[in-house]
Image (tube, rainbow, N blue to C red; front, side, top):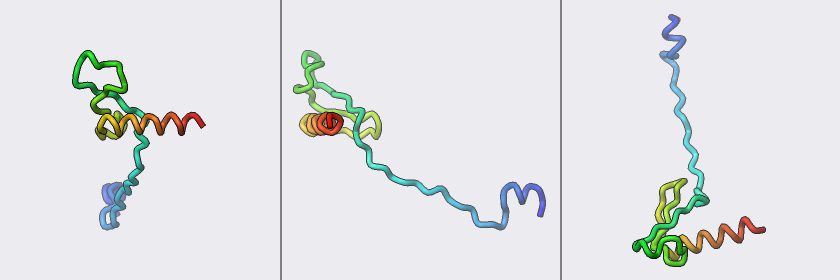
Length: 75
């Protein structure tokens, strides 16, 4: 067996990397507002964006996730 064959293991089956999906906990939510005058008021946020997984949530759903996170982290 040649050096290159040993290096690249020609003739042997290549193993493939296994990916494991992990559910995002959405711990990095960023609020989004439609109107500049609403900025900074979390209850007026029109949507939320998870910086970890890139998923977008409606305003109500984002606020619910934030509330759940506070309850979970507070215990």
